[in-house]
Length: 202
Image (cartoon, rainbow, N blue to C red; front, top):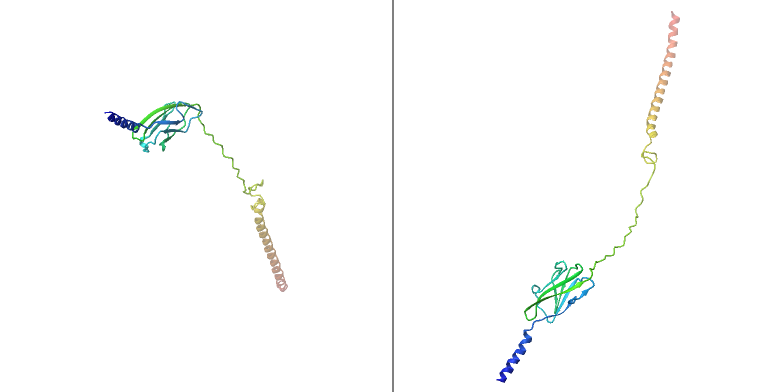
């Protein structure tokens, strides 16, 4: 009878640890802690490796306004699960988690932490780039369009060809008149001797 009781006790002692589930051993931020700024990720560490099936791991980070700010899928690395979050407002946050422990049983719980400030990313403006202008400046001039020196004929220049043509016509006309007058005088002189003998015969 005594041997039977000892055997049963040994069986119970060896079965109890096997039936024990994994549990959370640490978190970041810590349970009930107050952090200076809103973190960009939540990290949970368990006593044993959890199943790596992403569908079996659920982590929600509920902001003070009730919005779940968890972003994307959790990352599992051995016994640690990391959940990226979108930084929200100041206040108390609630982390709700559900995982499957190494013995195949799901475990879940929740805890809270408080954030005192929101991290606002600051960007340094890029230095202004000065571009040196190497192009040639456009020539400037106060002369009006069409003035001499710009390749455009002036008003007086337009009359020069006309005056030259007119002078040539006048000169040619004068020469013609002179030639005609000289020819007429010669003809008159030639006719004068012929007319004189005819008058003497009468």
